[in-house]
Image 1 (cartoon, each protein chain N blue to C red):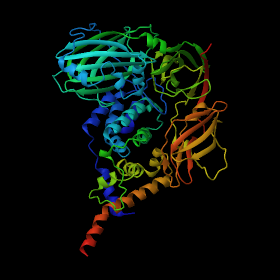
Image 2: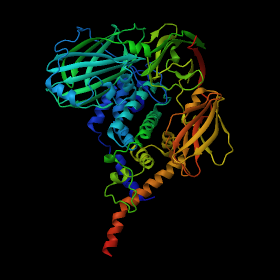
Image 3: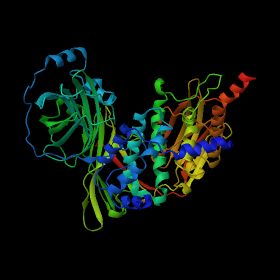
Length: 176
Length: 454
């Protein structure tokens, strides 16, 4: 069933419609939370809180077409709250922040390269390419200006390009 | 822009990832716990939400500690020797407010055991106060491998509960640790109750599944003790306020070291049912925080009005304040429209302080100073107008527009004025204060003052 219809029905009190909405977004909710938080259990914490907030406030969404942006914004806020605590306790076995060594790391696949980006860059990449949000909607979700969104996307792409291309440059040097 | 990277990203974005089973089950758990309507009575706050579901109650046999009451098997005795948590399951909790319950001796020691279908379940202790019910338990069995369960990672027991024979609304968090055939755990419930309680309530606690094993473990537990009663500061203000068509009565206020609660009876237009929210402050206008909320069943009065009770949960306190200022807001059903929001950026090194940010509802946030210290950055500000402005969204940004992490909640720095400070991580160079505000105010507010001394 069309998502906007489900939103309308959920707003009228149809719990099953809400359940279908959320189940249809499972992958998105996971991906977006994973772009900010380091562990699956914290992602689940944030998503569960988000679902509770969304369930109780869905009647406040004025236009069903805004629902995805709206719930994504809630999720980002919940993830950032957890991230504030998380930065004080770094789990080394799932540490995804980029290396601080001078030699750039070489990545053979895109997902690993994306995982190595700073959180802010990783989040805009996820929202733009995975969630198909517009630059304007990303600005709304993250509470940042459109210019900042574009800047971060550009930086992310440049960094990914450099990470992905790095090993090819070394190969050429070795063969020269 | 690197075309090849963009193409790779497009492909990556189209590849919808399978979520882990654990994650999908976690989503199912929370969806299954939701009540049957998307229009429940819950006050939603920006910082934390707790949802309340109906606890279903079995009309089953109620028994006192049955088979094996007081009996401890050799395996359990060994575990109890090695794991220094017996008698202090609460003391071993990851939740500091539950540790306080243990430190102050506020829990009722029960040690009631029921054995059924090869599983021994012991309720070791319980605490009830300030809208919170916490139960400690142990499980002993060799029929299944007992698992450790963290917050939001699963439900180790399936149960139904009743207090003094009444259904009650609750939301439960669980933590469980396991050691070779024995598990110890805590069930932490935020409880909404419509009726006042006697001093020693009776909890009917009926379990029908333990770690996947079906059976029947039924308990009748007398809660409350002298220490809890003495640590609880309770009031019945019965202050009534009307606001247009709505009427609010502050019925009960209760402060305990583990959690506090305020119960407000409200009669509002049906069309406004979910539009009112509460923020609670002490007599000096300092926020008392927020730990969740719940609502009772809705009573439709048939004249376009409805009546129900709100339970507002607050963090625990040793002492009660001398008074309360309860700020009620009404958003008239309008979700914050992004188009109605304005970004505000104040480059702190370039503006003259004090610097005033004027809000469309007439409130003001006055930046009075900031300190870039060796280990942190401190922002000082005053507020005028709406009290909840003290907790408004504020961010400090570096010259690249990247945020500094906020380290503390707002802290009151003067009682003469509404002065506060917030601490952020260390910063260097020029910093910008970032916030946002409504261009046109859509939220009205009113304050109920409650004197708790007279």
